[in-house]
Length: 268
Image (cartoon, rainbow, N blue to C red; front, side, top):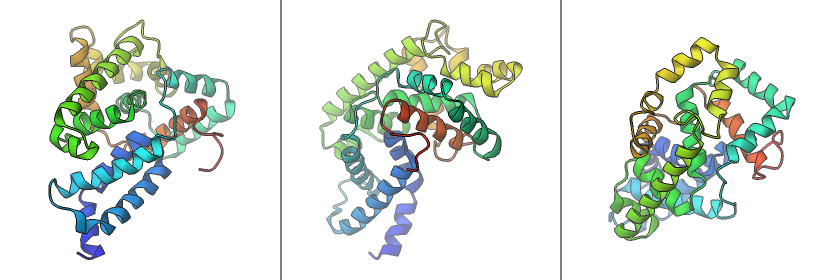
């Protein structure tokens, strides 16, 4: 197989691969680097592809291994990471001005509540151990089968099911205790706070009531609310959405607040 033929095959799943990597590493520059490295490594090793799985699963395994090497040099995020980002933004007029500029000038600077829930899902998943995070995202967002995830992570199906159960339980607990959209006592008010800044009050309520998650918060149990979240997240590509640039700036602020990025204004 020559490189052009491989590029054609790779292109069929390149977009979901990139969005998957973004959910793991939360940095667009790192995504580009990891995607490039994945392509090069996969092409160089194509002779070892034994069709035990689909080419897509095999390539995702290579990408996951590269992302794992990247992520294990970093600390897991804490559940209050978004609060720390909000504190940093509130205390910095310069950062708030960047948010305003991107929101008003970028074609991808919109603020939509459903996209912020997707952003929040990514942030909360970063609190999980890497293997749990990978298993959860591959199964619940990208619809990989347990067997395929086992091949990607080099684990038995029983272990993958255990990783998934633990990951879903942790995510559900954090959402239940922190999300102000479904629990008025939730400690995280980032959604409503940002919505208040960028949407008029009438539009705020209209945006909220469009969401099944909000409408169902008093009648669904916590597992069903988690399922509603995953349905919403699956429908959004974090790299090609109406608020992609806006959320990139919020993510930069968060990574600065937790010490993963040294300076919000530094070139990456």
